[in-house]
Length: 306
Image 1 (tube, rainbow, N blue to C red):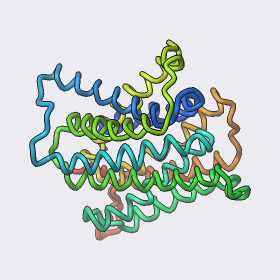
Image 2 (tube, rainbow, N blue to C red; image 1 turned 120 degrees about the vertical axis):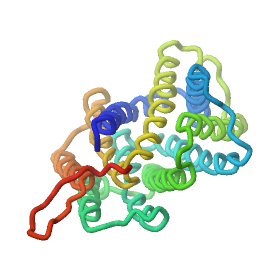
Image 3 (cartoon, rainbow, N blue to C red; image 1 turned 60 degrees about the horizontal axis):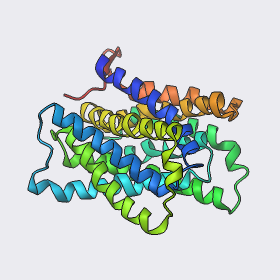
């Protein structure tokens, strides 16, 4: 991977890693579906403003609407809305860990739908990353009971599947598509659908929406953590092998656990440290193409695609 891709992944990991605790805090204040719909719509409007400033086309072509609607429902209903609902019952750090089962699903789906071969090297990286996630999750697995927490954990793993499906669908159907336009319409269409449902099932209390501190957190989550960050993610996916992109952001659960420890007083234990080591090894191994010459010498080249 070149320096631009590495830098983009680093920024994305820091932004998304810090976001989970802020979302968990926000869910103690705002109704979940109103929160996520406002978050998505604000993010979309921000990106639309950027697109207009760049003097680029905002409206999709007529033939793009069906694909945009499908991708927006996968992203906003399957990923964002389900994640937001489930996080009411699960700690922020554990939520990130469960959602980042995504690369496990991507590795399999990309093999069948994108012709991105799940070779031995990627499989080993996948196994290492999975072992790391299991290590982090192990204490919770020992204390699972049939309750809202368990339901939330199961839903967050399902969220990982929806994120993988969104990533595969985007990669397959939007090659060469304007990534900014794609992201803004994914969020605007899906956010609108969630908003309609939220207005039906959730009460609207204007007092909680008129607090400057809470609103500033919501704006950061929407503009930086959602709109600009997912735009960056779509660009990363367009630059490298989908599997490499997916496993490269597996450090985000580690960062979310760290930020949870520092700012939200969530504990960091030995199993988390062990998991971090395995995940980092999986990232390094999966991000390099290791080619063996006839004489047995190994050559390392980047995993970037042309």
